[in-house]
Image (cartoon, rainbow, N blue to C red; front, top):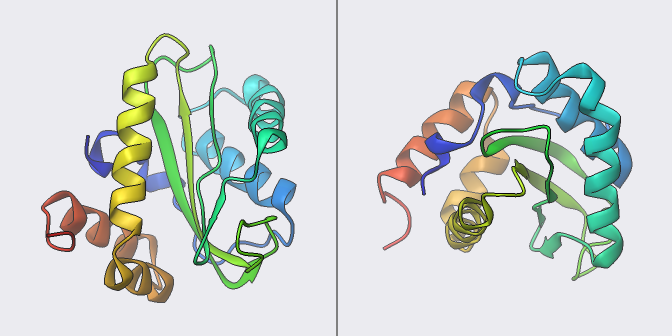
Length: 158
Protein backbone atom coordinates (compact mmCIF):
# COMPACT_ATOMS: atom_id res chain seq x y z
CA UNK A 1 0.00 0.00 0.00
CA UNK A 2 1.40 3.39 -1.00
CA UNK A 3 0.50 6.90 0.10
CA UNK A 4 -0.59 7.61 -3.48
CA UNK A 5 -3.26 4.90 -3.04
CA UNK A 6 -5.15 6.86 -0.39
CA UNK A 7 -3.81 10.37 0.32
CA UNK A 8 -5.89 13.09 -1.33
CA UNK A 9 -3.44 15.82 -2.36
CA UNK A 10 -6.18 18.45 -2.56
CA UNK A 11 -7.03 17.86 1.11
CA UNK A 12 -3.49 18.31 2.49
CA UNK A 13 -3.38 21.18 4.97
CA UNK A 14 -0.29 23.16 5.80
CA UNK A 15 -0.25 25.18 9.01
CA UNK A 16 -3.47 24.12 10.67
CA UNK A 17 -5.57 26.76 12.41
CA UNK A 18 -6.68 24.18 14.98
CA UNK A 19 -5.32 24.30 18.51
CA UNK A 20 -6.93 21.19 20.04
CA UNK A 21 -7.59 17.57 19.10
CA UNK A 22 -11.22 17.94 18.01
CA UNK A 23 -10.45 21.05 15.94
CA UNK A 24 -7.57 19.27 14.16
CA UNK A 25 -9.82 16.37 13.22
CA UNK A 26 -12.65 18.72 12.19
CA UNK A 27 -10.27 20.74 9.99
CA UNK A 28 -8.91 17.61 8.31
CA UNK A 29 -12.35 16.08 7.67
CA UNK A 30 -13.50 19.46 6.33
CA UNK A 31 -10.50 19.42 3.96
CA UNK A 32 -11.69 16.07 2.60
CA UNK A 33 -15.19 17.55 2.15
CA UNK A 34 -13.75 20.59 0.34
CA UNK A 35 -11.75 18.26 -1.91
CA UNK A 36 -14.96 16.41 -2.85
CA UNK A 37 -13.88 13.15 -1.18
CA UNK A 38 -16.47 13.18 1.64
CA UNK A 39 -20.09 14.34 1.45
CA UNK A 40 -20.87 17.45 3.52
CA UNK A 41 -23.77 15.64 5.17
CA UNK A 42 -21.42 12.93 6.47
CA UNK A 43 -18.86 15.29 8.00
CA UNK A 44 -20.27 15.39 11.55
CA UNK A 45 -20.86 11.64 11.65
CA UNK A 46 -17.28 10.93 10.52
CA UNK A 47 -15.95 13.43 13.07
CA UNK A 48 -17.91 11.63 15.82
CA UNK A 49 -16.58 8.25 14.68
CA UNK A 50 -12.97 9.45 14.79
CA UNK A 51 -13.45 11.06 18.21
CA UNK A 52 -15.05 7.84 19.47
CA UNK A 53 -11.93 5.97 18.27
CA UNK A 54 -9.78 8.52 20.15
CA UNK A 55 -11.68 7.65 23.37
CA UNK A 56 -10.27 4.12 23.12
CA UNK A 57 -6.77 5.56 23.23
CA UNK A 58 -5.02 8.51 21.67
CA UNK A 59 -3.72 8.06 18.14
CA UNK A 60 -0.98 10.52 19.08
CA UNK A 61 1.75 7.90 18.80
CA UNK A 62 4.65 10.05 19.97
CA UNK A 63 7.53 11.97 18.40
CA UNK A 64 5.13 14.70 17.20
CA UNK A 65 2.93 12.34 15.17
CA UNK A 66 -0.77 11.42 15.27
CA UNK A 67 -2.77 9.08 13.04
CA UNK A 68 -6.47 9.66 13.75
CA UNK A 69 -8.53 7.07 11.90
CA UNK A 70 -11.87 5.32 11.63
CA UNK A 71 -13.94 3.00 9.49
CA UNK A 72 -17.12 4.61 8.15
CA UNK A 73 -19.89 3.33 5.83
CA UNK A 74 -20.14 6.63 3.90
CA UNK A 75 -16.84 6.06 2.09
CA UNK A 76 -16.41 3.44 -0.61
CA UNK A 77 -12.62 3.56 -0.72
CA UNK A 78 -9.74 4.26 1.58
CA UNK A 79 -9.24 8.02 2.05
CA UNK A 80 -6.53 9.95 3.78
CA UNK A 81 -4.98 13.34 4.17
CA UNK A 82 -2.03 14.96 5.87
CA UNK A 83 -1.80 18.11 7.96
CA UNK A 84 1.10 19.95 9.53
CA UNK A 85 1.09 22.24 12.55
CA UNK A 86 4.27 24.24 12.94
CA UNK A 87 3.63 25.00 16.62
CA UNK A 88 2.13 21.61 17.42
CA UNK A 89 -1.17 20.71 19.06
CA UNK A 90 -1.86 18.96 22.36
CA UNK A 91 -3.32 15.64 21.17
CA UNK A 92 -3.06 13.58 24.37
CA UNK A 93 -0.04 11.95 22.75
CA UNK A 94 1.47 8.87 24.37
CA UNK A 95 4.71 10.76 25.11
CA UNK A 96 2.92 13.94 26.25
CA UNK A 97 4.52 15.99 23.45
CA UNK A 98 2.64 18.27 21.07
CA UNK A 99 1.83 16.86 17.64
CA UNK A 100 3.02 18.48 14.42
CA UNK A 101 2.28 15.77 11.83
CA UNK A 102 -1.20 14.36 11.32
CA UNK A 103 -2.24 11.54 9.01
CA UNK A 104 -6.03 11.10 8.95
CA UNK A 105 -7.46 7.88 7.56
CA UNK A 106 -11.06 6.85 6.80
CA UNK A 107 -11.90 3.48 5.30
CA UNK A 108 -15.01 1.49 4.45
CA UNK A 109 -15.95 -1.04 7.18
CA UNK A 110 -15.85 -3.89 4.66
CA UNK A 111 -12.19 -3.25 3.74
CA UNK A 112 -10.28 -3.90 7.00
CA UNK A 113 -7.23 -5.18 5.11
CA UNK A 114 -6.79 -1.87 3.29
CA UNK A 115 -7.17 0.01 6.57
CA UNK A 116 -4.47 -2.09 8.25
CA UNK A 117 -2.09 -1.91 5.28
CA UNK A 118 -2.42 1.89 5.17
CA UNK A 119 -1.78 2.18 8.92
CA UNK A 120 1.20 -0.15 8.54
CA UNK A 121 2.63 1.97 5.70
CA UNK A 122 2.14 5.19 7.65
CA UNK A 123 3.77 3.82 10.79
CA UNK A 124 6.68 2.30 8.85
CA UNK A 125 7.45 5.56 7.06
CA UNK A 126 7.00 7.66 10.18
CA UNK A 127 9.69 5.67 11.97
CA UNK A 128 12.17 7.33 9.61
CA UNK A 129 13.52 10.48 11.31
CA UNK A 130 14.60 12.10 8.03
CA UNK A 131 11.16 11.64 6.47
CA UNK A 132 9.47 13.17 9.54
CA UNK A 133 11.90 16.08 9.69
CA UNK A 134 11.32 16.88 6.00
CA UNK A 135 7.54 16.66 6.44
CA UNK A 136 7.65 19.06 9.41
CA UNK A 137 9.73 21.47 7.32
CA UNK A 138 7.48 21.28 4.25
CA UNK A 139 6.07 24.65 3.24
CA UNK A 140 3.48 23.65 0.63
CA UNK A 141 1.13 20.76 -0.01
CA UNK A 142 3.18 20.10 -3.16
CA UNK A 143 6.25 19.60 -0.93
CA UNK A 144 4.27 17.03 1.09
CA UNK A 145 3.09 15.24 -2.06
CA UNK A 146 6.69 15.05 -3.31
CA UNK A 147 7.87 13.61 0.03
CA UNK A 148 5.04 11.04 0.00
CA UNK A 149 6.00 10.06 -3.56
CA UNK A 150 9.63 9.65 -2.49
CA UNK A 151 8.48 7.48 0.43
CA UNK A 152 6.34 5.42 -1.97
CA UNK A 153 9.49 4.86 -4.01
CA UNK A 154 11.42 3.67 -0.95
CA UNK A 155 13.74 6.65 -0.87
CA UNK A 156 13.58 6.91 2.92
CA UNK A 157 13.09 3.53 4.58
CA UNK A 158 15.72 0.94 3.75
